[in-house]
Image (cartoon, rainbow, N blue to C red; front, side, top):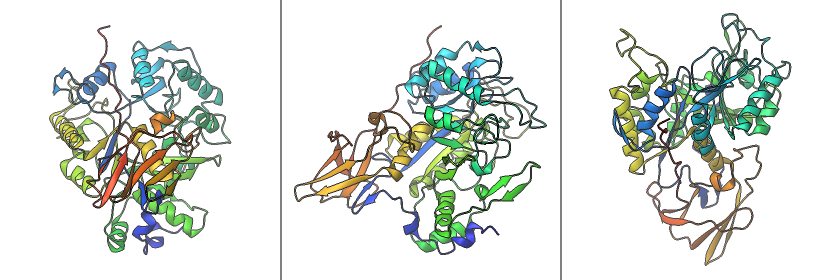
Amino acid sequence: MPVHPTALLKDATVTECLLPSERGDVRIRKYPFPYRAALAVSNDCDSCSIEIFEDWHGFVNGTGATPYGDGLGLEVGDSFWVFAGRSFGLPLYTGFADGSLTPWPHAERIAELGRMGWFDTLHCFGNWNQDYKSVRHDLGTRAEIERGLQLMQEKGLKPFVFVNHSWSPSNIAGPWGFYQKLDDPNHPMHAFDLMQDFGFRYYWPDYAMEMAKFGDQLEFADDEELRKAIADYKNWKLIYRRKEDRRDEILDFAMEDVDKRALFLAMFNRTLVRMRALDGSPLTVFKRYRGAWAADESSFGKQASRDNLDGLEARQGAVVLYQHFGVTRRTADGSKKRSLHPVLGELSVQAWRDIAERHAKGNLFLTTTGRLLDYLNLAEKLDFTVDKSSERWTITLSSLENSAEWSLRPSEELLNGISFTVPEDAPEIVILDSRGRILDLERRADPVHPGKHAVYRQWRKLEWIPPTSS
C-alpha cells in the first residue's frame, strides 16, 4: 500500500534538505549575489492579445512612460503557442497543427523577443482540434509535434520550459498523466525524445501546483521546525494522479524508502522535482504557486502580497508564480467583468512596485522562468572540484555542454550570475570553466551569510525592446 509522505518523513532532518552543492567550506550560492530570495512569473498566454501583452510588459519590463507610471525595467518573461487552434493568445500561426497555417500578424514581435530570451516558455504547442467535453485522445500525432518544432527552429526560437495547457493531448505529465499524451509511448503523439533533443528541460504538469505554501527552497532553523512544517503541510498534490473517470488516486512510487524520502522532500520544499516520463525518460518537473484564487490578474496582488514576499525573503525561498494576465476576469467582489484596458489593476501595480523595490535593494532576485530554473538547477547539480593552497583556492567547474540536465544555452549564458560562498578568511579565489579558462569574478562580504564572502559574476539582465511604431 502506498505510504503517505507525512508518515515517511516524520523524522526528517534539515541535513537531508541541504542541496548537494557543497565541497567542504565552498558551496554554490542559492541565488546570484547579493539576493536572498528569488521570484519568477510564469504567465500562460491564454486570451492574451498583443495589446494586452505590450500593456503590462511595457510597465513591468520597459523604462518609458506608461499608463501606470514609468516602467520598472524588470526581467519578466512570457509564454507562447505555435498553433492558435480555436483559442486566442500569442501564437506563431493561426490554424491547427494538422491543417493549413497562416502567420499570426504579430508573430515577428514574438519571434524577435523570443530570440532575445524573453519567451523561454512554450504553453504546450497550442490548441488542438478536439472536443474538450469528451477529452478525446485519438487526436494528435508525432508528425504534428515535429512540425511545431520545425516551425520554431525556422524562427530561431529555442524555448526550454514547457507548460501544460488545459486538456491538450500535447501535454506532458509523467506519472500524473491521464489526458496528456506527448510522453506516452503507446500513443501516436509520443514525442518526448524529440522534445529533449530540441532542448526542452523543465516541465510543468497540472498537478505541480501549490495552493498554500508560498515558495520552496525554504530554510528551517532546526529539525523540529522542519518536521512541524511537514506535518502541517496539506497540499500533497504530487502524490496523486487523476484517472480517466476524473477521480484522484494515490500513486505508488516503486522505489526504496531512501529514494522516496528524497522525492517527498523535493515535493515539499524544492522548486524542481526529478521524476520519470511515461516512456521512462528522466523528467524534471517544476512547481508553480497559484494560491487559493483563480490564476489571473485579479489575484496577483494577493499572490505577491507583502506578507508572502516578507516570508519568502526571511526564509530565503524561491517561488514561480502561476498567472494568466490576459484572461478576462471579474472584479474583486465578483460583480461584473472588468475591462482588460488597462490590464493591471491598482493592487497589481502596487505589487509590481513592491517587487521592483525589493529587487533594487538586492533582496529579491527576479528573472524569467527559464533563467531562474537553470540557476536553481545549476546550484543543485553542477559538479566542481576545489584545489587549495595557502595562497589560492582554485574552483574548477564541470562541463556544461550538451547536458540533459539544464538548458542548451551557451555556457556563457548558463554561468550568468554564478556565485559561490567561501570563508571570509579564504585566500585568493580563482574559478575555471571546464576548458580551464578563468572567469571574471568579484568578491564581497555576503550579506546573507555572516562570516562568508561571495565570489560571483554579476547578473546580466536581458535587454527589453519596446514595439516599433509599425
